[in-house]
Length: 132
Image 1 (tube, rainbow, N blue to C red):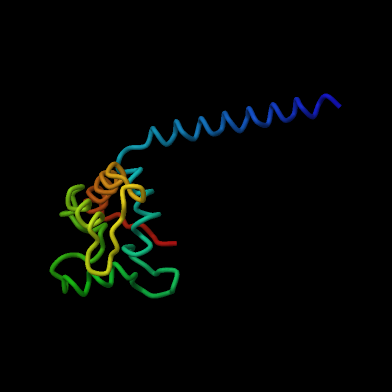
Image 2: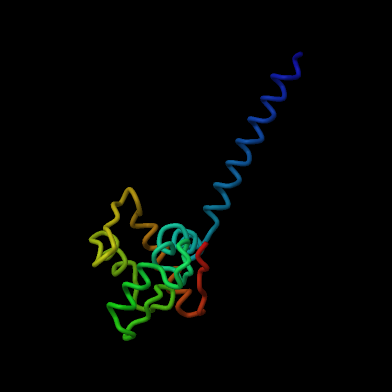
C-alpha cells in the first residue's frame, strides 16, 4: 500500500505546478486585460450595460449616471474617454452620490489604474462588457 503516499505526492506536486502556471499567466496580462477582468468583477455589476441579475435593462450605477448627466456624458463607463486613473481614484475612494467608497483593501490603486487602462481601450474600440 505504498502507492497511496506516492499518489498524494504526485497530486500535490501537480497542484503546485498548476498554481505556479496560473500566477505566471496573470503576470503576463497587460494593464488593460487585468483592468477588464477587475471591471467585470467589481464595476460591471452596477456600471455595466445590463441587463443585470435583476432583469432590469439598466443597472443602478448606469441608471444613476444617466439621470445625473442627462445625456451630456455617456452613462456607460466603457464609453467614457474622461476616466483617467486619478479621476477614477477620486470617485472610488470618496464615493459619489449613490456609490459607496472603496478602501484600498477592497480595490488597490494599481487595480484602479488597470481599470482606467481598460476603459481607455474600451472607449476607443467600442468594446462593451456583457454583465452576467
